[in-house]
Length: 474
Image (cartoon, rainbow, N blue to C red; front, side, top):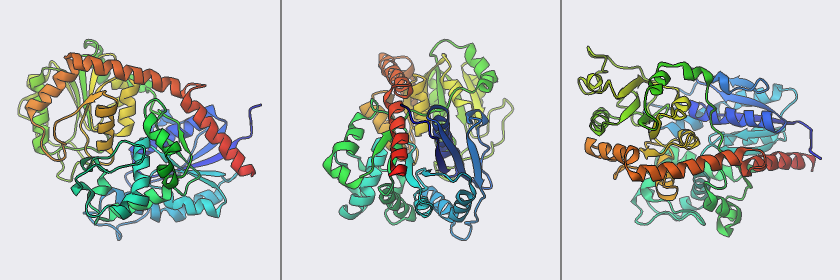
């Protein structure tokens, strides 16, 4: 007989749209499919974006944790991982106060990647504690192994190693694919990353936004590899793919109307997520590459910032007489107006990817975007910029074979227009692109089965809820 007792869960979310969306989706899933009462504890900043209302179930509560002043703890050179870690650390009094005032008080605390220091609050209130890894099982395995083993065993910088970093039972990590915090062991963000890798193993379990068919090797290693299990010793629950649904309001935009007039699978969608930016030189080369490829495109473009590849939320620059922004080649819009659609800063991504006219996605390979692309059956040009995106790009190109990528990392070398032209044609015109499209559609069907009732991820979420109830009774 099914247990109908309602579980009380709090989900702690660090700042940023890329963190908010998968946690809202997790909360919705627990509320609508698993008889759980869930509350989102959202750590805010003065510039936090509004919640995406169409993602919110009426039964999902949100408590905003007020912004904290960290101005005395950071400087203009502070890296993103360090910023988020400090924000979450300083927000703990507000988090503790919010949990203390909840009635009924939650029995389970789920934190995202940056929230593990709040495990001590869960211990204070006798709550179970879980971490929600909003990316791959491979990332979880390598992070836990780095924090507990590689940090002690590897001498010197990871990027200077001659051989790939071996993660027991998993695909090795090439030095050039290391996540951003591992690029400089002398920087504070590396120390924060190591701490998080250690603290992940203090959880009662780890929820992963992936599924069995997508990452069978890494999941098998996390469960059964003797060495890795001795390090990452927590139960893992693959519960994905959790991704944004199509927003009905998004289908009324001018972009969608333009796509309605294009042939099936003829448009390349170009976007680098909510935070990705390119240099002025790279923007110029990308513009010329798209033009030379003669492929139809929708490009979500941002001005260069001079603040690295993870700059975000900046204002558009000036525009020329034909409407071309001043950071694009002169006359670009005039020359490409019949085949291209330029959007400054933001576009309804899920609605674009799910449109029948879209046949490819030039993407930064953030995991949210990757899942949305696979869910739409759209193959990719992998253009990783920061965070764990290089790992994702390697998974997409070498293991899943649903993407192509430039010969050199875009963060190491400017990708020239000739190579961009070839990549666009490979994906959109040639037999290779058709093969990738067939494979990504298989993953699309596999992901849909996984989260459907009786599927592997649905059953894994059921197991998580049941394990919570069992532990609370024991």
